[in-house]
Image (cartoon, rainbow, N blue to C red; front, top):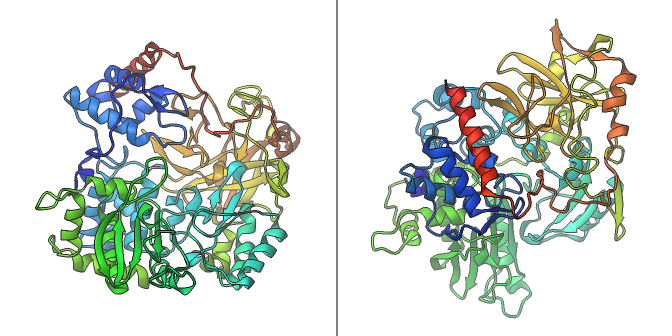
Length: 636
């Protein structure tokens, strides 16, 4: 396997050796602080989660995770250890190793669900790391509808809702626009839909239109209207093909040498819906002027007089990488043949959440020392590994089994029901009642988040057991069938939003507030449930803060806490023990927790308090020592 499958850091992932170098800009963490924490934790205790917990590096936007892992790997190697490539505590395999086990199993029916894979190769309940990773693997191999047969419990926030969750818990709608080509009627349909639902409209960098601010319960109706105009899901929410950007090529441009628009449409329609370890972007330029920026994409084509030059392994973003030439002057069919193989090779061997560029950099060199691109030419063009038939077959299967996920929801009442706001009532709480919206250049957007630590953040109940002296009664909130297994479902109790978690994997039920205390967003029911060292938990979908479902305690270093309520099942009825409506509303009512404009805004929107620049390594070492001692106590 490539070095990435063995947990090796990419050669191109270089990090300054200066201890003062800032690695995490969200939390102002230096290389020196990270190295200090690793040293204190020791070879056995220095894992990425432990370093992240001690230093907070990588726990903001996550963009510095590759650098933190690179420092961790280097420091452990200096200490005589090595960085574990295990997926998480539930699977002692890397993603590549687990993918190999699943795809080569002689009995595919024994590994066609998360539960079966967990039983065969893992332990525990799973978590917010392994569930989406395996959900993606199953989509790449089996390609069933992600909301069917319990697979919705594996999906990260965006995939479960088939839309990107935005600040405050609203969602965005991004239809597919192959090659950026739209008819006037489609433009009108987009405008009419945006006006009807009050959506903020913006052109994306990938030549399509993004409509922001939809409530989850509105999504099926919005997509029903867009479907009538010929729109399909754009998969902006998934780790999948996003867009194939194009210039107008020879159809209009006097410099164009090939019809780049038509080819871009063909490419996008071939790979739409294909799930992968991370998002994929592409571009087709009609001449050497490169207006579609094809060489900054995961894969891109530049037209020549004789066909196309095919480039692979590029990306923009925080660490831009220039794509490399895989083949020159090839026709469209050959481009697709090579792309089928390249993309499937990437899907089968890349690490979790790894783009094509770092994956490609980690591949072995070719036989003649030509680097990873020579290796790719040998594998994809010369079939040096003898796997081209498998790669061709697997990609063709994905193409043949394509389905428009939103069309599937719109036509199926059971799938539409998954988007109902509350399980116990048809009443809806409008987004404006949960979050203030403000005008920006004639459109509405959510008010800025307050800075962490200011009012409307890090909410805490007035007392650790605020309802201890309240008179309570068992309230029926629905039937068992109203609550899908292994996911959270919101209910409405007067003005209070609660979350019911049917942990079918354990045969347990939980009820908590639906409002995440960090930013006062009503989203916890949309989080992934699992366990941490045997403790049942839910991960907030906004910033991945995790809370124990039994007692509501935040797992990790934080001190936030959820209010929880007992649940029992009587026959087919789900009952929750609750105080009187007025008492609960006084603490958890939506109206009282509505987020409004703040003069002290948090532009970054991250989940963490920013330490001072002069914070000493001693503080980091103290945290590392405490964590190490705690770990040793647990082991005993």
